[in-house]
Each structure stands twice: as C-alpha cells, then as structure tokens.
Length: 295
Ligand code: PLP
Image 1: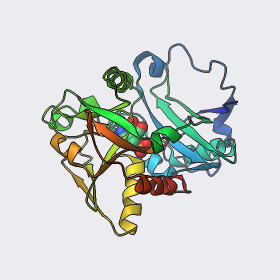
Image 2: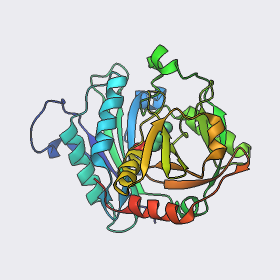
Image 3: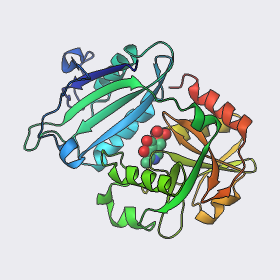
C-alpha cells in the first residue's frame, strides 16, 4: 500500500528568524482536495517545485534542493522562500516517511490564488516508484530539438529555462514523443546542436576516464544529483568537466546516464537507435553512492 503525507505551509518572510515554524504548518489529508479552484499553480502552472529523494527515512541533498528552490523563486519573481521554514517542513515530511525503502518529498511554491494576497506553499511525501529496472537494464533515449538555440536563455530570460517551474507539460509531451519513437526517454538538444538535458534528468557522459555534463548556462536546470556525483567522482580521482557537448558526441560516449533525484542513475543503452556501451559495474557503484545518506 503506497503511503502519502501532505503539509500546507503558511509562507514566512525570508528574514523571519524565529527558530520554530511549527505553527505555520497544517497537516492535511493527502487523499482529499486541499487547493482553491483559483490556484494559479493549477490554472497556469505558475509556480516552482523540487523533488527530493528519500532513502530509509533520510531526505537527500536538502541544502542543494533549497538552494535551487531559492534560485527558481528569484527567476520567477516569487518571494524568497524562508530557508529554515522549508527545512523544518522537510524534516517533518521525512519523519513521516518509512524507515526503510525509497520515497520522494516534493516542495511546491505557487503564485497563490488569483488576486490573492500570498503564495501557496505545500510539501508532500510519498512512496517512490520502483526504479530498479531503469537503473539496471537501462533506458533507450532519442534526441529531441527543444526549439531554442543556445543564445535563447540570455536573449529571452522569460522562458525560465533555468528554473524548475510547475509548467512541465512540454517535458511530459517530450517523453510521450520519445515513447512514440520506441524509446523510454528523451534528451533535449538546442536547435544549434548542443546537448541540453532530459525532460526530468541531467545528462552525464563518460569519455575514457573523463566524465562530462553540459555546462549549466541557464538553458538547463543544474541537477543536484549530477553535482553530488561529480563531487564523488572527483573524490575518487576521476576527471569531471562542464562543457558544450555537440549532439554528434553522444554516440561516441564510452558510457552515459540520465541522473535525477528519485530515479538516480539510469544508464543509456542507445541514442537514436545507435547502441552505446553500458558500464554495469560503474552504474551499480554510482547508484550505491547515490543511495547512501547524502546531505
Ligand atoms: N533537468 C530537469 C529538466 C529536471 O526536471 C530534473 C529533475 O527533475 C533534472 C534536470 C535533475 O535534477 P535533480 O538531479 O536535482 O533531480
């Protein structure tokens, strides 16, 4: 039986320095409606979110997720989240998660109700889907043109390409298109031929002993899982690099993965029908690391 938990948050000002935010939290029944019909998150996808992996009751990489929530809020002109308030909400949600197994905690900050006075904020916790097949058997991907060239984020910051907004309809459409083309997932590329990211994950490639990911120029989300993996690989003596990666490099990789907070490392077995090698031992060791408690 899947478990679920939900907490509404009365968002505090970012400079509210009280030590205990309990009285700003209201536990709600996750199986019953809790949002107003005027919510701009549901009407316009106008808000931001984070998905945090939970392993054996431990919420992973809370600091980097809170950093990115603050960055997304800034890009979207939302009030800066009170870091300590959100941290305490995550602690509550993690405490409600089972002591063993994998879960996901979501943080959501929306612009609120139309003409309303304040943003709406809530946190949910739920059982994670079983990702073992993607982690061990791998995934086939296709490249899909995102329709923007690599100058778009600077020229048109209102596209919010570097923010984790609630507007994921395009990302979901890309995954459906990938499935129509016989693959499991997609990799977005810029119209001038650079590798960007997957609809819900970062891309990491291995060339020899070098691990490479597309530079986070504002065209993509900077993945917390990729950052954590690069720190780990550096500690293990590997070379890591942020680079402009041409699409033509994808099939030349010695191994490649899609990385994200809940699915973790899914090895890529083929790009646009061209098989690429899978390093099963390295993938297993990466996923062991990603499943270990990380802060
Ligand atoms: N890029 C996109 C578009 C995503 O949606 C995600 C995660 O959902 C990522 C990258 C990977 O981010 P993280 O590793 O923080 O989950």
